Length: 190
Ligand SMILES: CC(C)(COP(=O)(O)OP(=O)(O)OC[C@H]1O[C@@H](n2cnc3c(N)ncnc32)[C@H](O)[C@@H]1OP(=O)(O)O)[C@@H](O)C(=O)NCCC(=O)NCCS
Image (tube, rainbow, N blue to C red; front, side):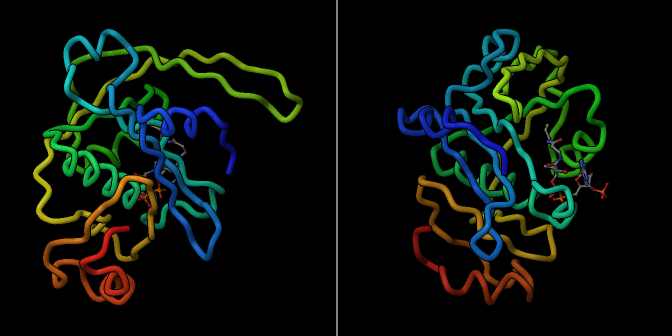
């Protein structure tokens, strides 16, 4: 999975929590919770107490759509809830209606601000590319009952983070496929 050292550095400084979804020991999905919120002033001034889930990606593409992205988002919401936040947001670019549809299905709504999503990456030849995409900021009010680990999906993916998540809530609500995997960690901190 393509990534860079910057998220790990941010996490080391306590600025973010980096989530990784694993299948059979292979990382196949990621997302980063930026605890200080969206970097774009258009958003941070209006929503100062709103962490942002950034860079959600499932890779390779054959791993989509199997519920992994939903699981990552669920864990991010649980992390934010555990830290005492009542909302979490994310930016979605105008050219990504399918991701926007997923977020809306998961309870995110348009926060009414547009922002420019700026990022850069190194290509295979070591060249750095600077990107600026127009995006909408979406927000979700968190009313997590226990732990919402991608419960809406029909499979459970273990998503790890360095921030401890305690598994609580109704086992029955998780469904039969989720139960056995989750049972290994029930009541523990992962
Ligand atoms: C968006 C993304 C993280 C969703 O992860 P996922 O594991 O495929 O999502 P889930 O299986 O939990 O949910 C599936 C839904 O994701 C949405 N989706 C968005 N982009 C998708 C894509 N490229 N392929 C498949 N599904 C996608 C769809 O709404 C899909 O539901 P549908 O099949 O009914 O249309 C993933 O598709 C991805 O990595 N896309 C490329 C990177 C990206 O666009 N990231 C979002 C940045 S805002």
